[in-house]
Length: 225
Image 1: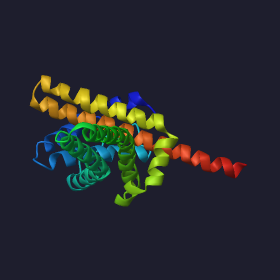
Image 2: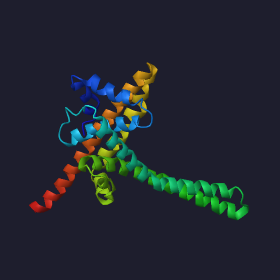
Image 3: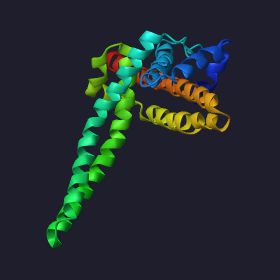
């Protein structure tokens, strides 16, 4: 994993400002704007997967980027459904416990707490799984590839550190760097958000390649034996 390259590859492109600014402006479009920006970033992920790590910055393709971004959000939503159910259940139990008395109230509080704790642990697993699922969808070009759970879990297990770096990069690029543009002005926030998306997307492609290369190595070794 080349963490530094994900931050600087954007500027290797002579037309980097135009390629970043156009998706940034598309982010202003209500509802679908974020789908477009996400899909554009995932085009960079595909470029990295295809071996173009140094020249991964894509040109916006409105239709395909919109579709890819929507699919990525749909994948994330589906992966998040179990968490919605669990935390809703825990919240309902806590709410009901407020009307109970004595021992029954204690039991309900413990049950709600256990469900909530399990939900937090599951959320960590789903965070890694859903990120790898999106990468697998981009690599294979098939929506169903995001739900090959055995393959997705294997990707995360084989190269956990790589996916951990993706999560760290996402927090840094989208949670810290992207909001910095608001200090300058609104358009600055749009540009840094698009840049942060490009950074995260590059890391996503790198992590997928790392997992794929390790899987290939495991296949080759038994054959050699």
